[in-house]
Length: 487
RNA sequence: GGCGACGUAGCCAAGUGGUAAGGCAGAGGUCUGCAAAACCUUUAUUCACCGGUUCGAAUCCGGUCGUCGCCUCCA
Image: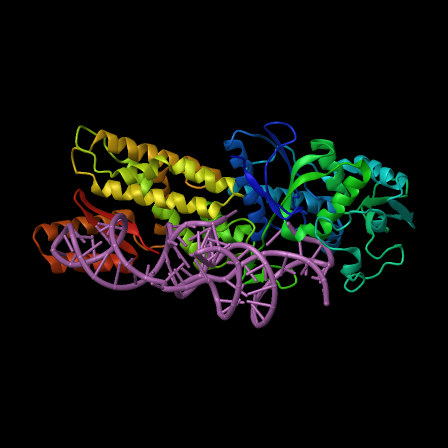
C-alpha cells in the first residue's frame, strides 16, 4: 500500500510515487528571519519533521531542503527600525531559530540554503525568464508577466480575472498587469544591494525558492511544502517562475498545513495575538507541544489554548507512567497468561494499524488514538498481573508492546525520554514551585507510616492533608507509600 | 465580489458507503483503614438543518444556515 498524500495542486489524495525510486526530494519554505518563531512556525517545523521521519521509517531516502529567507523587505524594515544592519538582524534570528528548533528536537534538514548565498542563481533565472518573454525590466525592477503564463492560478485555483487586482494591492505604475510580481527589485540608497544586469538591487521574495530548489533538487522534484497561507501568492508565483523557465513540471505534490489559531482567530502581527515558541516552552515541555500539534490532522486548523496544552500534558504523563511501570517489571516465570486473545491481537497489530493511519495523508490524530488504545491494554495487563509469578509471555508482551509504542511515538518525536527519568525530572520541576524539600516530605511520610501502623488514622490523614495543601499527593501501595507533585 | 475549507458527545478529535476510534472532563464500581493512582463499566439510536441517490450515508448529490481562511506581508 503506497502512502497517500493530499495534493493541493490536484485537490485529491494521491499515492506518493517519487521520481527516483525510493528517494523523496522535499523542499519546504523556511522562515524569513526577522523575529522570534511563533507557534504557527512550530506547527510547520513539526509537521514536516514528522513527515520526514515517517517517510524514512517507511524506507524512503529523503533529501530535505528548507531555506532561510535572509533578505527581504521585512528584514530591511525591521533592521532600520532597530538601527542595526540587515545582515546582522537576519543572522541573529537564524540563531534564535536554531535555539527553538533544537529545543523541540526538530531534525535538521539535509540542506538549509540561504537566499543571500544564491544571488547568481537567481539572476540567471531572471535572465532566462526575460529571454523567454515572461519577464520585463521596468525602471530598476524586473517583473514577471502573469498574462504570458497560461497556467497562472493553477495551484491556488483562481483565475486572473477573478482576483480583483488592485482592490487590496496598490497598483504599481511600473507593472504592465496589476498582478505582475517582482523578480528583482532595484535598491534605494542605504538598502542592501547586489550588482545585477538591471542595476544594483535585491531579489524578489519568490525567486529564491525557484532558484534554490532547482539547484539542489532539480527542475522537477517530488514534494513542495509550506503553510496554507503560502499557496497564494508565494507558491503560485514560484511555480510560474520555475515552470516558465524550464518548461517542465515543478513540484509533483504540494503539501500545505493548516493554521494555528488562538481563540479561533488566526495569529497575525497586526492582531498582536501571536505566541512565540519560547513563551510556550516556558510553561510546557516540548513533547507536550508535539502531542498537541499532532492531535489533529495537519491540514485542519488547530486552536491553541492553555486547556488544550494541559490535556496534552496529562496524556503524555499517562503514557510515560505506563512505560515506567513496564520498565520496573521483574522477569516473568511460568505462571498462566492473563492477557485475552483480543488484547494480545491489539498489541500485535499496533504497528500495522499505525502505519495504515499514517499512510492516509499522515493522520497523526488517528495514529495517536491507536497508541493510547495500546497504552490502555498495557495498563490493563500490568494491573491484572499476579504480584509474584507473572507469565513470561505476558512480560514479553508488555515489554515489546512498550518498545513498539515508543518507537512509533518517536515518529512524532514523542516519548523519547527515559520514562523513569521523565517522571523524576517532572517531579523535580514541580518541587521547585513548592516550599518543601524532599527530606521534609519523606520525614512526614515516615511519621505517617508509623501512625498508620498504629492505626492512628486521624494523625495519618492529617499528615496527608497537610502534604496535599503543599501540592504533594500520596499513594499508598503494597510496597509502601509513594508521592507525587500535583499541579 | 471571487476561490476554498469546515460544522461529529461538556471540550478536543478520528471516521474516505456497511451500522459512531481515541484523549480530556464527568458518573458508578474494583482496589484502599479512608484516599490517590491504575483498571473495569458508563456518557452521541446519532454525526448543523432540509431533501435526494442507495438494500444501507456522518460518509455520495442538491439546497439552507453557521464558522473560518485565502484573494495584502504571513507558517
